[in-house]
Length: 339
Image (cartoon, rainbow, N blue to C red; front, side):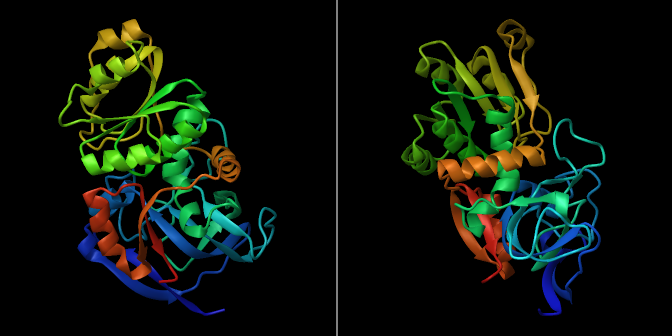
């Protein structure tokens, strides 16, 4: 095996300070695995961490960005029992969160935990799961954050079932995973976007309805009309800010809002009466634990889930991929290390 590898490094905040360096390939220690990375999926959190560190607590350079990868185990340390050489794996988003309540010792990969934008990475064996057999490496790399966030919101906590209606805000990675999972479970879907072309693409994927948020800013009224006044069962709240108020007004009594993103403001605000009278559930979603990711992997194999990849970039094209991320992709952006 080669002795050195390429790795992206951020010495100061700002993508202009990203550099590609050549370093020795690390060796796995006790309980660790060495993975040859095949694909790295980018999340908006990665851009926030690179720009200012605002994608998570305790983010300080120098660091290697990105949390989501798929690859192959090429070496294992002592006392490793979960994996063997030659097995395909994906990273977990949270290192150390296996199941149940989030533990304080859990660390988010890609800052402050180890970053995946390297040709080889060392992970504790508990920080990886077997990759889905039905997905290639590019597709599989999109599951740890975006896929699991949608799964945790709709399935793990939301207990989504056939006949329900889900509002999906936007057409990014989490949103389109939410759309696909809702469809796979027999739910109707309403996609909200400010882009006609993206709405058309969402409808082509199977969305039941599309609402243009710029032409119909009071979209919650339209959502209620589309459900004959009953209200929707679940909203994936990705915009944040005062949009939460519209999400609550769109819900049926006892409906659920999964608070996922804050693309607008860092605070959310809403009037009290819709929440009190509607008896709604508002739950924050901070991705999810390893057991839920393993559930998603099994579901991906059984459902023949096909993650939406907007574009694939070469490993050296990280700056271009970040520019695309800022513009807003339709689905996911993935860096391939074979390019």
